[in-house]
Structure formats: structure tokens, C-alpha cells
Image 1: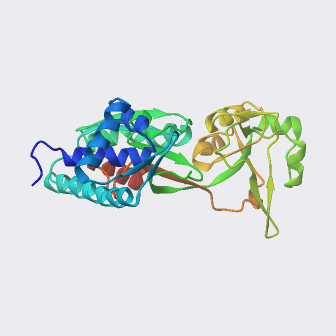
Image 2: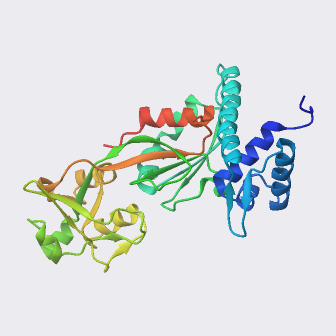
Image 3: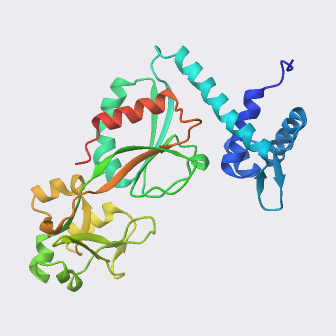
Length: 301
């Protein structure tokens, strides 16, 4: 019989985090522990189980077959424990601090305007929102949810698609008066195209030319770090930008920007995902409440 003072679920949680984070130091930061304390905990766990869970090298931990099996079962056990707690408190309003990081256009134009409504529906959830195009490490930043645009990088995070936003090519009337309006895709070579200076964004602009997808790569003469900066530069007459429809709709209506080459728009758009840390696909009630709210209320068109 297990000793009553053995916190087996706590050991499992630390062990799972060591596996998912790839080392003792990263897991220790998540739990405000020292790496040596995490190492000793795993050592005690191995002693209690009578098996070696890791083969240790100077640079990396490698799971043994026994370690892999224990990890798989631990993930399931922790998910079941969380599900049991959520089921017991399902009638209780979701509560607690929810840390969200969201990219600039979606955050400024779609998430922040909905915060008062969310607060009314979920008064016991304390929101902590960071609006930035910096891709944060959810573990290191202790964030619950990150809302990201474009292709997702391979990670141990769980993703939920919020929608897709259509993209358009835009420029200010002042810019077009000075440099002319491009009537063909090829004419873009003679214009100032606003690009991005970070690798995670799809740099090429796709166009449908008589059924063939052609791409244009913005040059390096004008690059910015986020879509809101590209919008501001375009409004100021700095060049031509490719931005989400929801991001520039008001500017187009107000005459600050004009849509260009829309007859060559291939359709589709950029996927918007919410990613979060989960165990066995399970999510805390406060996270589920926020994601369900976003899917129901956030308009990406």
C-alpha cells in the first residue's frame, strides 16, 4: 500500500513536465523549484518504482521504454484527475486568473473590444492580457492561452482553430497618386512593398493569375515587426501592404486605404489558432470558457 505522505499526483505532474520540457531546469522554472530538487524528485520516483525512467547524458534526457509507458499513463491519470475536479465544480462559475497573449491585430481589433462582455459573463475570471506579436513560451511566461496567426510550429501545445481571416492588398490614395496604381501583379515589382522582419510569417503574397498561383516577395527596403505597424505605414503613404480584411475595413470605408488587385485574390486566408498547455487534451474551465467565448463572438471576416 502506498504511503499516505507520498504525493503521487504531484510526482506525476513534475515528471510529465520534465518530459514535455526536455529537462530538469525548464521544469524547475515552471514549478518555482531548483533543478536539483526536480532531479531528486525524479530519482525518488525511480527508486519507488524500481525502474529507470531516463537515460541521462550531458546534454539531453532520453526516455527509457519504461519511462515512456509511465509518461503515457501519467498524462491520462492527470487528465482524469482534472476532469473529476471540473465535473465536481461544473455548476460553479469558472474562476481564477487567466493569462492570455494575443497578436496585435486580433488583440486590438477583435479581443479587447469584447473584454467588457466577457467580464459580464464571467465575473470570477481575472483577465491578464498581453497584446504583442512576440511569440512567447507559454511555460516560461506562465500564460494560459496564446492566440497566433499563420502556420503553427511543432510543439507540445494543444491548438484550437478560432477561424480564418481573408487578406487584401492595400495602399493609401496619397501613395497611389504619387506612384501610380498597379493594375497587374507584375506591376508590383515597381512599388514599395511592406514586408515583415520575422521568419514565422509567410512572406510571399499569393495571387491567382488565370488559375495559376503566383507569388510576390516583398523586398527588403521596408520591413516591420508587426501588422499594425504595416497598417500605419500604409496609411501614411509608405507603401503597399497585405493585411487582414478586419484589420483595414474601417480604413477602407473612411478612404484612408484602397484595396488593390482584388480580382487576383486567391481567397482562403490566414488561420488563427488559440494554443494552450494541456494534459491528455483536457483544459481548465477558465480556459474553456475563454475559448468558447472567442469562437462564438470573435468575427475574423
